[in-house]
Image (cartoon, rainbow, N blue to C red; front, side):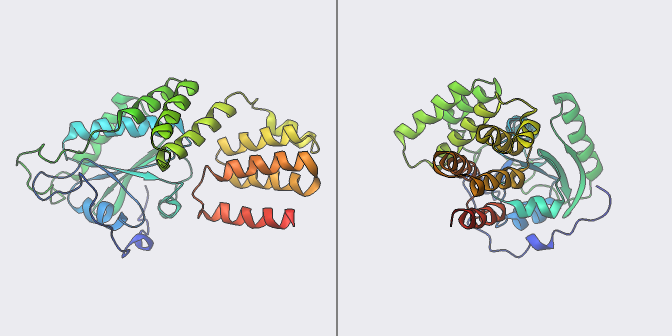
Length: 297
C-alpha cells in the first residue's frame, strides 16, 4: 500500500479482557485472534511491533472470505507465532474496513510497526499465498522485536479447537451444499436455541442458497419492470450479493412506497430478512430502517 494509512481513529479504545487462547505470557503469541474496534490497538497496532500482523478483512456473507480465512488460519498455525492472523468481520466492524480504505472483500493487509506493509484482494492459490507471507516475513526480518518468549516451549496454551459442528457446516458451504449446511446450523440451534452465531450463520446460508438460483440479469429485468414485485425482490438479492446493500434496501423501500396489501407485505418481509444479515447498529441498516418507517407511515 502506497503511503501511510491513518489508523488513529481506532486507537485509544477501551480494550476488553484477553480472550481465551490469546495470553502470550508463557507460550508465545496466539497465532489467530479475532479483532474488533475495541481491541484493534492492542491486537494489531501494538502487536505489529513484535511480529507482522496479517489482517484478514472478510464477511460471513462471502464464501470466498470464509475459505480464505480458513486457509490463512492453517498457515498461521504452521507458522507458530512468526506472524499473527487477525480476523476482522467487516459487517460488525465497518470502521476497521473504512480505516484501511477497503473496497472489496476479502482483503488481506500485512501490518508491521503499526503501518500497512502489503495487501491483496480476493482468494489466492496456496503456493502464491505462502510466497506472499514469506515476502512479508523477509521484509520485516530484524526490524521488529519478535514474539515474547521466543524459543520457549510452545503448545501449553494452544487455541481451543474449533467447534466441529460449525466446521462441518462451513465445509458444506465450501462444497456448495447449502442444504447440508443449513441442516448443520439448524441442528446446533435445536440443541442451543440461543446460539447467536448459529442463528446468524443460518440466515446467511439461506441467503446464499437463495441467491445462487437468481439470474445475473435480474437487476436489468427489475429495472425494466418496476411494478413486478417478484423481480424487485430478486434484484435486491443480487445487489446485496454484489456488496451493494444500500441499492438493495433502496429498491425494496421504493417498492413498498408504491404498493399495498400482499405485495407490500412481500417486499417488507424480504427487506427485514436482509436487515438480519447485518449488525443492527450498522449505519446503513439504521438509515434504511428510518426510510422504511417513512415509507410505511
